[in-house]
Length: 303
Image (tube, rainbow, N blue to C red; front, side):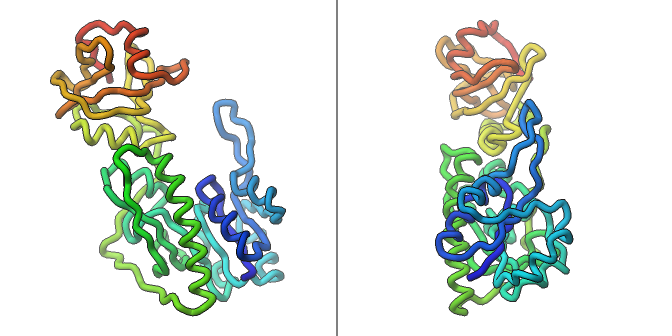
């Protein structure tokens, strides 16, 4: 098929690579270059870099109306959308006979929105999945084409899970395109009464409330990786908690428990062994190394 591809971040790159192996991608459309990182250096989106390696022409409109002529002239048979970054207006959706086919990182109608992987992990879900659907002008509410369930492993965070889901999603998107070509797929309307939402993360979403049970805190640590990350305060500085396991111990919420070799913190119910941390202005280190260097007095309370 002759296609357009719309996507921006790393998550979308696997889909672009997979589709380009079996179809002709006439244009890759992604968001404009943006300033990012501590130095606020302007850098291209991952999809733009991958498209360049594949010699696919790239469009980066601020507004999709700027590229309607490309749709009119090239007449893509279908448009694949993976984490593009904006809702596509209805008048743009009319440009493709097979429709705009979106890959979403959840089992819709659950977790509609910008952060389905993070939110699923934060909620302690044991499974998630990927969905292909026909795009309409509402948020992730179009008819479902295909779905694949994916187990969430207890030891993986949202960053690691996203890599697996990106690869699984790319294969599902290829399967969907094949099904559209041979006419074997039938769109199924979503049950909107069962919809849940996964709004974009903010910095504050990473704040640890040590009064919460240890399971909820651990899910927060896993689910906010890599950004904003889960964090607390120690001596007026931000302490980022990168990894943690369940531990036995009793104390006040946020209290550093007396242990010579392990960085253990009490919560509202249970305790956590902090495996990896990063104190403000320093590099990442193991919890044990941090505890050794910080020399925290007994009874120190985080938060």
